[in-house]
Image 1: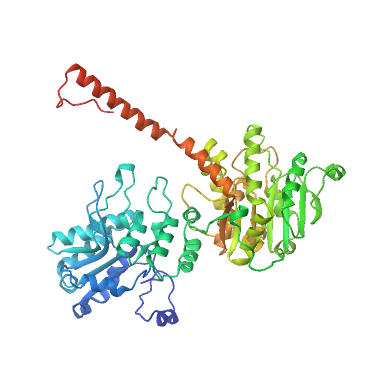
Image 2: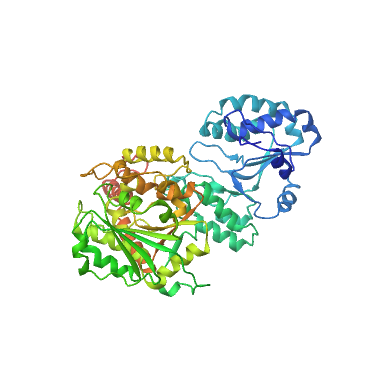
Length: 551
């Protein structure tokens, strides 16, 4: 069953009977689709030993399905699934509905038919479908006298509800299920990004699949994730982070000579020596487009030593749109799209904050993007090796994360402008979490073809408001945050990059600061409270049975 258009050729390739919903929205989710199919096949259900209900929320099979049926053939039950949610915080234990097998005794029963008539009209949202569909199915069928079992019974694993995390084991312990239980189907949501996740991540799942001996094509899985899921989920995939420390840079497999452009906006000319020095790490010839609103820069340019391999062009631009508008309008569209790889930079000072904060931020971005000749060569080879790679950008600088943790979210005005621009570009990227992916400081490598919709949008200088600008809430801020999502909507992927030394420094900084997080302080105060009260209780002779004051 599909809500997408299904052609006759698609049906033949699937070698199945396909019921297509072309004229109705996706009401009721998978449970409504299953109900429709069951009604169509009602007279035939008695002819089958088992009926499989499955949705498309999984990758698989990770292991031969013969293992699945061999194990469950000897299990006495009326219905079964792959995994069971063990129940937590008012949620009763239940079989997860991404794969359910209904045996004939139950499939032909009145209780089974009545469940669908009763449940599906109540499945108006995803939460309703989980409550009145998935959870109620196991509960009501058990109450009707049928017995359900799971392929993977995990009595030794419990939910981590104590840290506010109550997702099912198929999501938050997928790596353990793969290695220890040969989990045959992997939920896409197992790769989701959760704020307080301390169990399996995308990297751990990929490592588990490699250790398990599964033959599932991991490149296929990763391409699907990168095309269809929030970019923040993909941050945890092993291949997303490109480390460029000289010791771990692999020798190039083949020589490459990409046509490279560097766009450098020079609002603060005194920082040009710092940028020109870093650009010396680009070994091959490249076109250097320097944009600036300062006409006098032409006179003082002789004081600077530009990289000898750079073909320099100076563009005097209006002082509108900060570094974004000059970048989009510096050269004609055809010329921009003719480059294989481009690097966007600007002389960043962050004058609204302390100079030390701004300097650390700028140095982090430059060190990530232009670390060394070997490191830059590694990044350029990444583009050559992967034609679907559209962006390489630095991760969030720790100094920004620790100083301004809410900056991830942006402002409501940024979000509104971003939605308007996506509508204008006719792009619909997957939804995102509260930890979006973008270059904080708008410096990054990119394949111009990856962001062609933005370059073709005709965003001239009049699109951008005049100075002075607020710190947030302009079209320039919205574009800064949208770049990776434009590339994703245009079928390109992204990577993040830093050196090993930067990664080590970031770990030390975040580890030191995280010990002062308010939740840690709260727990420490709570433990101190109980320690003091325990001492008072025993010293004053209060009996063990007396109720303690609560916190």
